[in-house]
Length: 288
Image 1 (cartoon, rainbow, N blue to C red):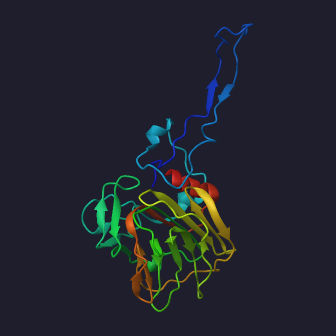
Image 2 (cartoon, helix red, strand yellow):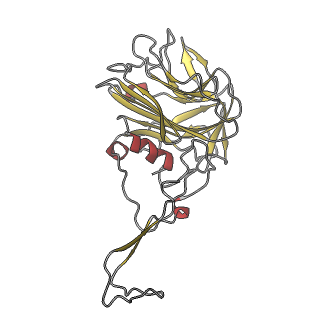
């Protein structure tokens, strides 16, 4: 996720000249230095923030130089619980890049070198990545994010979810329903999901970036697609509780049975213990 800009390219929007004489045929000539002369362009305002992207653009391509600034949203600096970049390319372990040791286990899934950023994980509709770390998941605030390139969109197609042993309650569920993005956080009852059933279906064989947030302090939830807010509400629960089962990348678990299998490629899955702002969601999308 970090250090790579995916699907967005910007050019410098500000040029500074100092202590230089005015030249280029302008009359009359300026007698003495000119301070803080500025010229702006509109490239930043016109940057592509759609949820589909061409993977592989890097920070070096953006036209920026020097030290990368830190994230604007402090949640990104302090709140990372786990992140899986799926760069291994072999074996059955998907390493957690956060340093917290919350590795995943591939259950029939395979590696691909055509991820959103470098490598990724490929799923055929009956496999997933197991994240057996329910005791580590946030209970008072949450952000879940991931890149998805579906080859088929049907019913539920899960990017990442935590299910249940005896019902259909999802503490969190990020993915697609009937081809359109979905985010939900439920407590003891099946709550409403952020899902626009009237939206046009997402494109298959194209990369999409989804971010779901929830804040138990006020129930606020938001779903961002391609770094931009799609929907929000205040219908979230005050707290989350997790059955002692594994979460899944690429599937859900309802009443102990795996379901909602994803078909296609997934990459850069992220869990944080805070709700990112709109700026933070855009930063995740840009790879900062």
